[in-house]
Image (cartoon, rainbow, N blue to C red; front, top):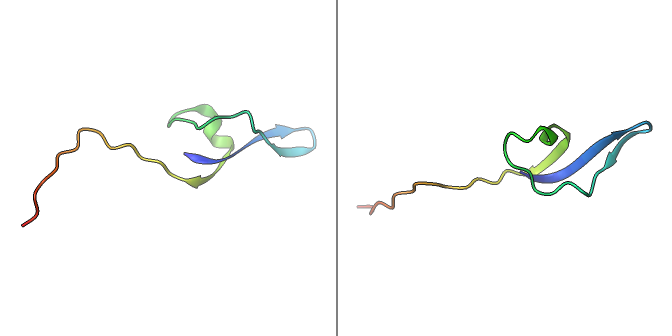
Length: 50
């Protein structure tokens, strides 16, 4: 998921620039305002179209 990560401070929310691109299931995802959902295809089979 691509987006902007935020961290909670005593004055509210601030941008956390130290957070890299996160994988699904990472607990830090709950603090990310997502802009893109990135999907990785696995075990793809190419089929000919008629």
